[in-house]
Image (tube, rainbow, N blue to C red):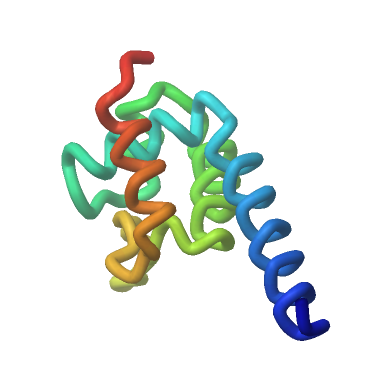
Length: 103
């Protein structure tokens, strides 16, 4: 196996590990399920819906954003989050499984 292919596989494995760690949290899974169901929402609306403080919700959303599960858009003082449209097939399958599983 060429060295470049080996490095690429290691990079992909590390990215998947980060993704699984982020999605392995029950609060973040609830956020993903909520956004799959309702679409684009503000941090405040998400916070109210999952009964978590604004600050804690914001931290969870940032983690999901950093692994490309979510995209965000700021309009005036509100930040809106939604499921990223550019997810690769592996992530889409994983999120779909989460969405259809019971909590």
